[in-house]
Length: 329
Image (tube, rainbow, N blue to C red; front, side, top):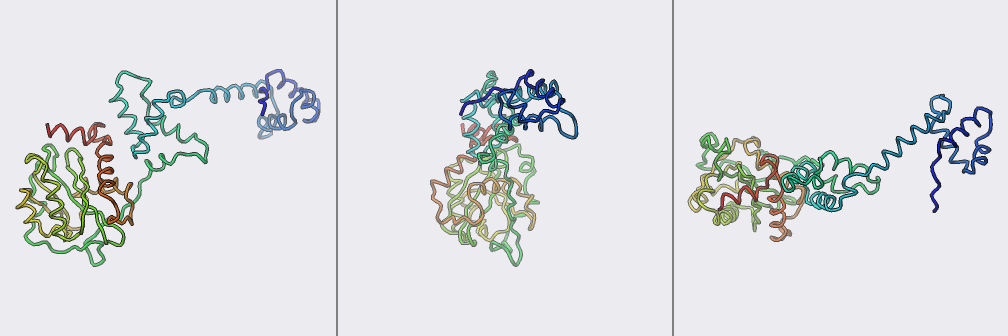
């Protein structure tokens, strides 16, 4: 379809004079060889709230809108930047994580840097039907139901024999200066019939996702011990857990791994805040109701790598893989 040129100042002057003389919109359109609808829209757009149509004012408004339209966004003219941003939105990175990571990767290249506000702006101006699902994903903050150890618990909670309270945990665990202190948990699957084990290191946020054949104490103990077996002694200092019965064999776990287990107070998820926050991130990939018995080990480890390759604000936008990897050298 042919594009008609925009109205110019001379045509707008003719419209203004025509209206002043009482000429109809249709006749004004005919004299300018324009569509009546074009003239009607022009007049309605610039004569609101009882104000008469003014040619100069209308032209200024048109010039301003044209300038805004023609000002192309950085992601429109820089394809490598655009592809980096969209790729990492697909990986559930937030706009802030993307922007800060670009500064680390391209410290002297302004063409490959963008603010997180510009990323939001780019996505929001997409046509309504094409608003990218990546934006929805990275903004989504789903509420994850916390488990409680009461009569209606989602897990089998109860007294743990001979447990060591979190109150006896060394101060070095709380200040996060010395690595090797972990928090553990289970993510429950559909109808609580399956589960996924999670272990997260408090200092580096390195996360291990553990496939479980069962969720009883013996299966969890063996699976967690196997996960820790490949780590050096310096990175196996302690594990903080809740009162789920899957950790009932904590003494056997400590005997085989030399890792002391400390138990948080009941109904106190904030005492394992790193684990709780990590579980929320994992739920982006495995939402509530997932049947973990049908999730392959390959899928679990792929998700684990995606989490550990995501830059974290608390790590100054380095990734857990990068920070943890330095400790293994």
